[in-house]
Image (spheres, rainbow, N blue to C red):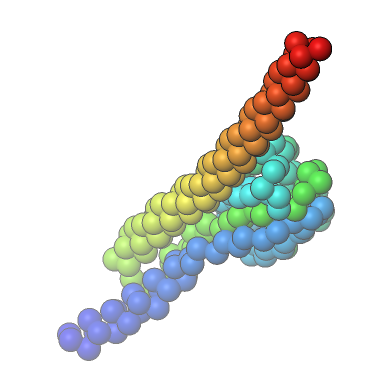
Length: 212
């Protein structure tokens, strides 16, 4: 009986492993266009996608210029797109298995740093792992729990990227405010010096006229 329980435990561990999906995300710098490929092995899977434009290559660039993202399936057909956005998050159902391409286009004249995350959610057929009818409900619950945990991680990564973007924007705005204050101070000092110089010239002329 103990041997049977140990065997079931080993089978359970081996069957849990396929459900574990590590979160994969990249942060890259784009000039004009950048493409990535991801293989989707099963039709009907759900692909989760998110991206955030973290920063521009110049601290003086403050416009909300977004990027384009076009997703194409293994046949080259467009399945989803996102236009002129600094951040987006969406999902789609795979209709054709194979290598999918995710292509970003930067319309800004500056280099942009983008945080990109993609994940494929897949539910296996539980009767392929074990014939024991007691395992199937357990596998189903494990798969749902795994997907729920990843969704939390996916959302957390999205929020962290948004926080990074906002922190950089705030830093750039503070830097611009400091530079503006320094420029205004310098202009005020220059204006004061010019006023003093003009007043001295005016008094010197008046003094010269009164002496005559």
